[in-house]
Structures are given as structure tokens and as C-alpha cells.
Image 1: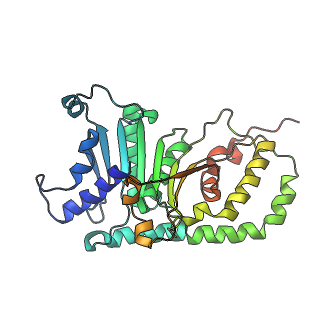
Image 2 (image 1 turned 180 degrees about the vertical axis):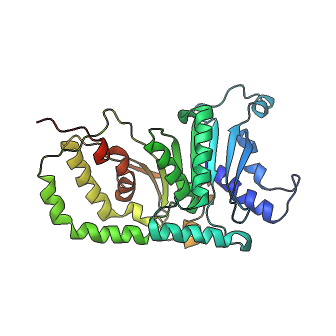
Image 3 (image 1 turned 90 degrees about the vertical axis):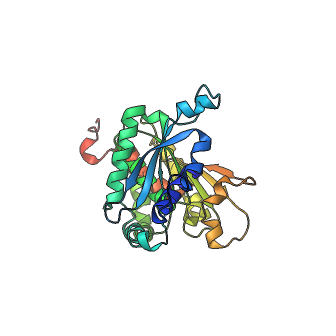
Length: 304
């Protein structure tokens, strides 16, 4: 998945450098996996490539005597790149970075609407269980938010998010508000719950890849937040309430420079050692919680 995201970075750099089909660098990042490029997502504001769709190339696979698609390999992948600090793209990339920093939402971006449309398209074509989304940095935020938008409609797709940003002014203000409201929450938790959730609701479980030395995404692995989440999940279990879940992969190599810790290349390195921790990200739980609780207008009336 990380290699497909790298391909999107290089598709845009190939475009900027006016590379031809013979000199382009991007294809070498999908051809070895027997996939083909079927669509690029273009930002209408500056013409830059910010995403791409790759599909399993059966013809290429047969040439190399691969008769069937490997187990677990998706039929299609939607990948998003992150910020490129190059003159042709930096303005729009930074604009979306600031949008996320301010609001923790990218729904106002043209890239969000284009990405969601592309995701719905491949989901309708292949089925949600046979596709995958991936992204790095800003691209991980887009992948997460279009995946969440689809999940809100009851369609769940596999997601791989590399170095997703966890810092925003919005989340900071929310944290302040939570501390102020702790007493009220404790009191309310003792009251009978009238909220009901959808019976048998399946949870969306994105995969997050985090480096402990990357301050952009370090909040996902905050120890204090993880402890709070354990208590929250215990309360949810006692009240039979669904709780958001994620698969969190943590890379720890001691102190690293930011560019190394935030880089995409670390996720395909040969010496990669990951620690997987399930259900221990407070932030992702908050971001997904709304998927598992019906809004007031849709809740069933309480039985008295």
C-alpha cells in the first residue's frame, strides 16, 4: 500500500518534470505488483495529481505465470499523496493542511469530493470487500475522511493510513472542553441511557501506521489518552454500547529526525519492525465514535 502511495507522489513529480512514458518514474511502483493505473485524480485548482486508482492487471499477471490474484490482494486501490513542497503544488497542499489544522475536516476541499466520488465508483464496481484505500500524511487524512464518509452510509472498505496527522486546533479545543465537562460526564454516566445503536452494526477498522518520533501523528500513541480509552471502552462494554476500533501499528527506532520519522519510505524498508496494538488510540476512537451511535432523530423510542 505504501508503494502505491509513493506512485502517486511520483505521478505528480513526473507531471511537473514533463517526463515521458519512457522516462517516468512512477510506473515502477505499481508494475511489479501486477497492477495498472486506470485513473488519476486531478485538483481542478492547479491541475496537480493528488490521487490515483490502481487495478489488478490480470493480463500482466498471466504473462508472469500468476494465474490468480493473491489472497488478500485487492482488486482496486485508491491512493492519496501528502504535501509536496514544490512551487506548482505547495499553495493548494498547504491550503488543505491549514484546513485540517483549523477544522480537523477536509470536506470543504475539492479533493475530498473527488476522492469520495472515486471511492464510491470502485466500491460499486468491485464491491467494498475487494478494494482498499491508502494515504500518507495529508493523503492519510483524505483517505480516512472519505473512508469514514462511506462508512457512515454503511459501506466499509479496508484503509491503510501512513503517518496520519493528529494535531489540529479543533482537537485542542475539544480536549479543553472535555476537561471542563468531566464532572458532567461522570454524572451523566450514572443516568439511564436512552440511546440505541443499530443492531449488529459492523465496525470500520482502519489501519494506522505511526512512528513514535513523528510529532505530527504522535498524539495517536499518547499514553495518557490510551489509558483514558481503556476506561471508556470498559464503560461501553458494561452498557452494551459499540466502541470505535482501529489497528495501530507503531514503529519505534529511538530518536529520529522529523523528515525520517515522517517519511513514507520507512514503511517498505527491509528492516521494518512493527508493534501492533489494538484498541489503544483515544483520538481515532473519537473520530469514529459517530459511526456507531444513531443521531437523536433516528433512535428508537425507549421502552418503559
